[in-house]
Image 1: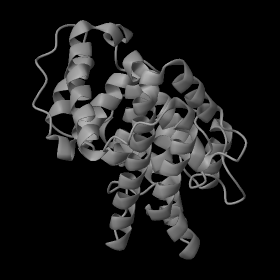
Image 2: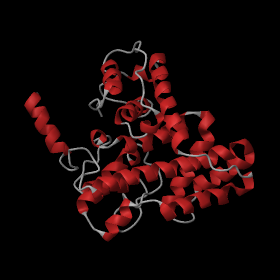
Image 3: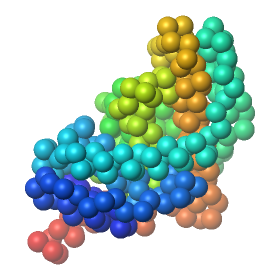
Image 4: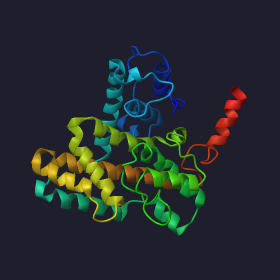
Length: 298
């Protein structure tokens, strides 16, 4: 995968430097206010790229950038913006005793599912293959990044849950989509990138280990078949060992639910207005258009 096209001043400056030898970076540009940060494609793409250097990297970026101090400082500024956005958008649930964490997590999920919008439910009422393909494109950003995430009923074949990267890739190919990692990175909105970035944020910082466990438990409770609650068991064990983390556990779960709700609201609002929830480029046209561009400019 190569660096995608920049989406604004943050990614323009960052990507220009990442394309060269590792060195000092200019001070980070002003980030958007917390109220806008979760949806800001420029900030979210910049942070996604920073995290990607700890994963598969980019073909056109020197691997030595991964631990370059100036890049880590830039990433930290972007993370501060993301954490401020989460603090504003997601109220912290009341803290409960460790022995009540499992029940509190289940209650959070049940309350959210009762009121959250669902693009998948809409598709069940109004079957639309094009929109189903859009959902799969959105989900590909984090499902192909982390093949160990729980199965997602919205992005799985109609016959059941998609539990794993192989089944997800088969679903994409069956829909005529490109199943290569990062193929649709240029097409998804900021909130889709934020869903992936928050998971990376929680996973990379030890201080956020409670939030990570709660986040994974919420994903598991909203998608996994009954009886396969490994992350939920992890939460209860972590709460028993470190009671001070119970608040973080619940907040991590609340963040997962809030991000999913915000993403669903974005998608359904676009559909109500007769618009694609992706960029101007329709899924399935990505490869052909990219080949034509290369041929025209090569």
